[in-house]
Image 1: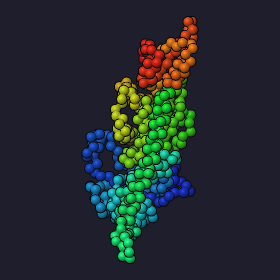
Image 2: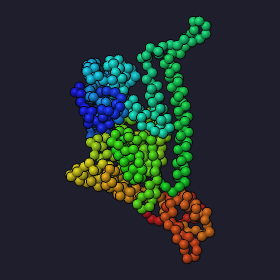
Image 3: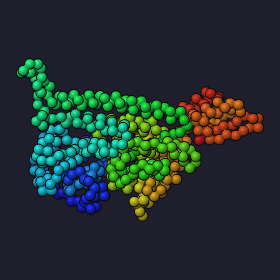
Length: 461
């Protein structure tokens, strides 16, 4: 394995005086038969190179202020049940750990509890796999009570399987009565029971969160605002775009998982249409299923959205693979395909492309079929945002119905109902004293309005 050295002075997340949490070595195990199975079904063009996966793993390690002193790719012919990698690689990495005084080894793969324990014994250092690393990042990023609960649930579910007999205190406790005492439960069983009890309590609290979120969504459905949710791979620029569109101040930084807790803001588009914009947690390849399950209450904001903006870092060399990873998570949430224009791709960071590369990208975008045509933007410079706002309005308008009503001038209650349940676009006093009202609403509220005020002819779109 050829380790790559890093100059700490060039590490934007971990400068020498930033309070780093330890000297780390990042290993990217590369299985030579990785192209087999489900990955091959996507085509080789969508597969990440080992170098790209290593770079992402280093970024994840630095996101929790680890001082990455070296990293490297470990080619594998097959996975060893006891240690994941072969004996020769274990010994080679042990030498690196000793010579570089490494305290933490990050293995960019999913390790079993036994594999993790064996590697820690062989290297004399803490070993963290990809799932544990992502859980650590999420734990640091969570700011709200809900986010902390979701992360704790995912962490306990992960930790439950890590209770292996690797410490001396995990021995059978004494139980029963009298001087001799019969065999009691093992410490492992006691720890597992405590974890299960804590998981049960967290799930009860998250059920309350889920009900509260549903009440909030139901209340939003009673007002005429559509919901647009931003999704995408971590570090694709969602929060920067969110800030541009909403004039908010959500943390946006060039780091993985800069933001975790969801944020919602009311946004008025140039035409006057008001929408609720939602910024969600970023996705990543091999996102632990425990995290998807734990954050389902948060991600239901995406499930219920009228429009989903899939923000992509189109300048990234693995943009296509990242897109497939996002689609995988969306499919786990029951969102598949492009559902009649509900999913809009936003190709971000075009400011990083110049000359022929930008021309080729625009030509490629224009060749896409109309329902799937992406919008090219730069959230950093603001380029293309007017076109994005226009496309958001066009797609939302296509999913909403515009209707004309005529109300009696004395029907204040009816006019108030329209303001609460629809978007009132115009009002005019007619010569006969009645009020002509033009409204726009989602199909459900449009049906309610017709039932209350009659069935006038709807506008053509």
